Image 1 (cartoon, rainbow, N blue to C red):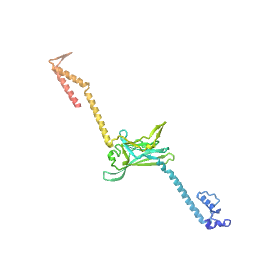
Image 2: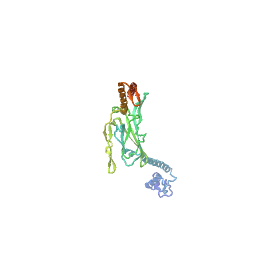
Image 3: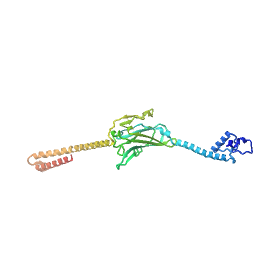
Image 4: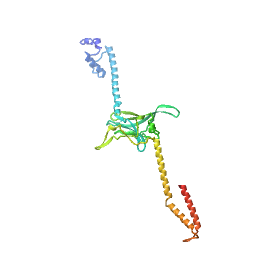
Length: 337
């Protein structure tokens, strides 16, 4: 503006009113621009009312400067508020495994934190994404089903100071209740696991996700141990984070395994009860009753009355009573057996 108006040609002319006072070159004009941009306003250089073009330029620069400042502050805030780098340090195992834990089939995967700073309030969720068809014939392409990883017991809230194995017990409410090893190889689904928590340094929410396809589930495997005690503290070897090894695991479904265990418990219960009944009826009571019946039969074989202390006993009556008692005892034992 100063070049166009010729202000630089009238620097020594006191009768000339420039667009901006005390502007005698590029450096002075640049300093005035910085004062306008940062709203410092030292007061030595000021725009005059004889320059409408300069006034419009001043307003334009003030508006653009405010927009640039807001954009830069927003970029810095968004960069800090989205801790993507922190989420990259939360790692999941490459495979999930299915094996026995406390005599129950469990689906397990491993999660760990590579940083020394902890994730505050970390919790774990899991979803099964699988297409299904309802009983009414409606087809749902991507149906989401919750997979319990300890929500009822509070085990989904993690204290992630060391790598943890997250376990899902395959029970009646589990979507894998009827799935055996052979059926697993034919299924098409995806398990999405989500770990959420707050970054300890900034207090911002961080989320890490991973997924497992049907072919990434290893039946009959278990994760290798990572922690070892050395010189009074635990040493974590992240080199074996993804390692698994095979263990003896039935290839049937959790339903079949529960039915087999129920049949075994029922068989043991009835076998123990039958043995107790046998010991009860073969005990000293049966021996005494057998001895009494033998004595009565021996008395019946004799002739004439039998004399006892205090009176005379009819042999025939005693034998009849003995036979009746013996027959009643036998019938009761057979019915109980």
